[in-house]
Structures are given as structure tokens and as C-alpha cells.
Image 1 (cartoon, helix red, strand yellow):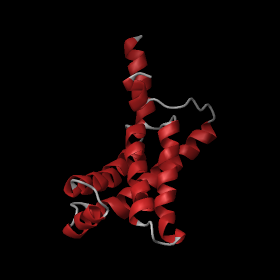
Image 2: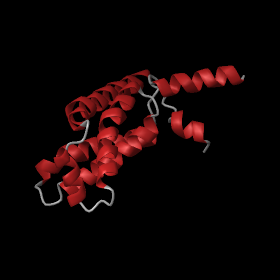
Image 3: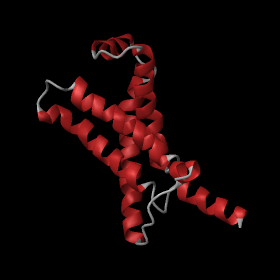
Length: 147
């Protein structure tokens, strides 16, 4: 798979209704993660960095910033459908850390939100943005320029 295809490509879904469904899910999920969680972590507080350190990460400052960036900017990129797959990959990894490390001892109800965001991110990692994302627009434009 070419790098450009991985960065901007997606599954060919012909149904307009399915593409609108992906659009709704993508925009809501991206904005919910960015505005509900990521924006509150920017810049990462000392307490957040300490929490990352307590999880055993070697460079907690770096990984704290990475988590905050993946939630805020990954969410925004997901919402607009730009670099959907790489954004979804970073979001997926962040949510799996949240669910299985940060909330490991917690009941399922405390892990549920991270798992939902993570599973949705995994789906967009596999599918791409759908027809109504900037990725699809840029791929279509690239094909017409190269033709």
C-alpha cells in the first residue's frame, strides 16, 4: 500500500446513506473527543504528566503531550476527515492506554468511554474517512491532476 493511499485513502463505500452515517459518526466522535477531553489536557498539567509517569511510561512529558495531542488534534482531524487513518491510529492507541492501563483497576463503567472512542477509532483506521471527508476530496483531486 502506498503511503499516500494509507494517509488519505479509504474503503470504497458506494452507498450515499452509509457515507452520511460515517460522516455523522466521524464528526461527532472527533468533536466529542477533542472538545470533551483533549482541550482540557492542553497543555498537559503537572498532575496529568505525573499520572502518565505512574503508568510506567519512560518519558512521561513526551507521552503526556502525545496523549493530549492525539485527543485534541486527532479528534479535530477525524472530524474533518483529514489524515483519518493516522489520526485514528493515534487515538486508538491513546484510548487503549486509557482503558487498559489508566482505568485497569476500575469497573467497566469507568473504562467504557475510552473503549467506545477506541473501537470507533479502530473502525476509522480500517475504513478511512468515507466519501465526505477531506481525505476523499484530496485523493480525488490528486487523481484528476495526475490524469
